[in-house]
Image (tube, rainbow over all chains, first blue to last red; front, side):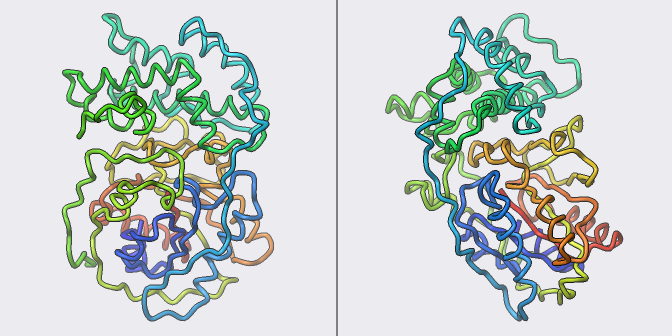
Length: 238
Length: 173
């Protein structure tokens, strides 16, 4: 991102960066940056807190009011507290009769979530949520899912994995509350058959003869949620 | 032509033990240091553009979340291009194709403005704190080598200037 700042300024645009990794700013010295102490993935703070988002945006634009002769880095002086919501629970019951049955039981809850939130981020693979689950579940079958839309199967698999996570995590927020990201991920990776499916898929991808599938294996499951991490085994990458 | 002074080999570590959803400061060592010490190009200091007065600012947001409009081909890892997201695109049609496990997307899933604060920008326009919120915002793919982005970044810069944009908020994830 700092590289973009250099290039855009060189073209004549004034830039400010809202930065999550201070160390990269220090190294790359863009003209103006505001470091924010938030979770990676949340540069403008807390979902639903328009006031905080606005203050971050205002603070970043305020850097343009300073007369600068050298790269300038400021710190945003508010935190976005991270805490679990002890009242949060998944708003429904999961069918444990297999991952496809489980996904079917998530569907009505996800629809409620989509209505409450007003949107959904599911769809990057181009597959409906339950089809994404089926696509991953059958990826190594002798009769894999049809994949007609031109996207390479490995790319579709990578995006289907993210769609599955989004499908479940959005459903988990159907009744609101303020569960932390850690809390939501703990539930997904430890409490669902879909989480188990993705770990199994990652294991298969790592030993696949398909080099492209091997390449994406490391980006499917957070390291701390992998079987070898949970069971104290040595990572295959080590 | 602006070029990095030094260009270290930008090779991501094969394995980074990143906990999925935390601030960098909360990631345990040695993983935190692996990320913080990621090789970055070193640039000569760029002379800052003299910003226009706040009331004249025409502001666009550029994200590195690999944002696309639903139905478009997702951006792939290390892709150098960018996508345009018009103001008329509904929030529900903005998807994230940066699918790294190294950052949290539950914030994005709940509220687009956590990543692309276009509602907040419109509010600043309405109250007169800025001149105009751009009609279009943009996204590159995160974790792509900054050097690889140069041509497209410059192309986008010229395109934004032609549209009257004079100020850019850059928002990595």
